[in-house]
Image 1 (cartoon, rainbow, N blue to C red):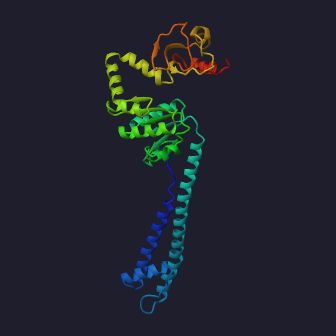
Image 2: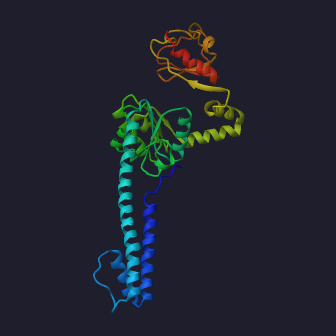
Image 3: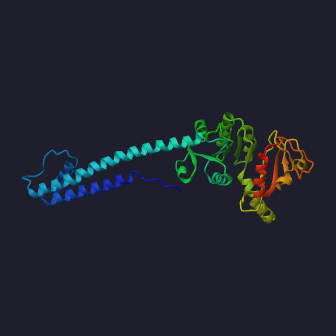
Length: 335
């Protein structure tokens, strides 16, 4: 968690010292013969430089000596405290303005990022995974303290507010993840995101099974119920623990030698209209194609070497980190 210097700390210290002078002056005037109230009154009007008149009969040398000390120490300290107060006030306002300006400039430069709405336990897990993948993420949450917890971009506000989504750059974002606690809020954000950016990829959290079809109708590409996924995974660890362990590491652990990845075949690229064998995908990169998701949403499992690939297909491949890097370079090469 990042910490910011407190501009009011010095003000509090100066006020404490000023209070000490007020108490000390009152005690000193008591010593030279004033009553408690008169001693406090004389100290207060001296520090405030009001200076109505000296309290008491025939003030002597000791009385005036105390007054001079209170003037020198108290008045100087009062002016210093006042200066610190205005300095802290201006510093706080200017600092907030500069911070907001820098944040907005950083947000305005983003392109193809992911907007994550909701910083609960689900949202934090999503954020960690996306950042591990090297994805730019903008977090949207209503709580200002979230900005102190994340060393990244945070927009403070209600995700259901269109202006907040626009500040997060929803028109330029690649994806929108809604991980709010309420199905109604997730549905509203999904509707807003889809209307402001028709091409955005939306993944939405559902807390109830009944909300899943409604969220899809609202425009979500994928609806996830964390409770169902968690239950399925726990059951897998009971019946097939080694398989569950392997799949978990293959999907999320960068240290694991073999990993699952996906990519989309773009029009006019080396794989568009070619077969797996003729394209040289296996020979050039070493990855193994486990399945292909067609544009209609269907999956082709265990594709053969003569299987034709077309634009819009999404091959799911298995390979090492080096093989995946080779694949990315190979895909970017001219046809």
